[in-house]
Length: 398
Image (cartoon, rainbow, N blue to C red; front, side, top):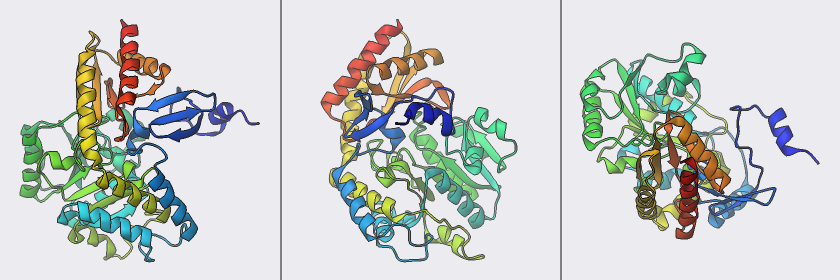
């Protein structure tokens, strides 16, 4: 019998010096079950992937049926594969008409890279604009956009030029000029501390991109598919981007990403030269089958409405827990941030909440903010369990 924890630390490349280290045996609904018999409420949905919770029977059934048909058959874009076509058509049907051409990828970071290529080829420009506090992935192009220099600087010169502007400050948008191929923005910053911009900022961003001919790219990797109380985050602002990037919940628990736009824009990748952007495993049929099932459940059950309802309950209850260590509670739908007075308090709060059986986490680019993102299917009793655990953790910090 292998010592899994020992082999995990010995053989898997580590991402930090202090992984959570839970040995996951199985997962069901909103819960993770460990090999030692403990269970934990997954209050971050596997970092936004498991919007439907774990083990949704419709998703599992779709995976089983597709696995019996075929797995990988050919690189993306060469064969007509039912799972890919049906997902793309369903997704195009719920996006605005200007976003109805779908390019399927493996992940959000890969989709960001594809969107960057589209913007450069379509505009003939080189520059990008991103925002302080943003997070778009860890491949080199996506990292170059990232708003935290701590994560960029160890890797030397990255793709550019990239101009970083203050997130949410409409007066700074004049710095977007005709050298810019694309402006890449999150409708709500997650790793930046669950920051919510104003309608004026988003409207001004759309107008400025139109004025100078820059491509407006919305990164909805985390905010998509009901998380914020609307099916897509851009719906809160009355703004439609030129490209939208999706991933995480898109695959229903399997790896899947996409960038979507008009044929005029995305079609540039298919010629001069042809095969200007290709992927071996992007749009894997198993992931597409799972993604289609997950999207159908989300639409049929209007899970964005449930996210808005449960999120409002959770935010109100968290504000009732007001403690001297907390600065603010903010969020939209079931994407919620708790801001503390110091990073050490945020980290201690996370650790003590996990000890009480609820998985939460802090944010990469805002060390004082703890993020909550439970499944959109979360029940009232599970909310109460989490609130009790977080209340106890807060009391212990005093």
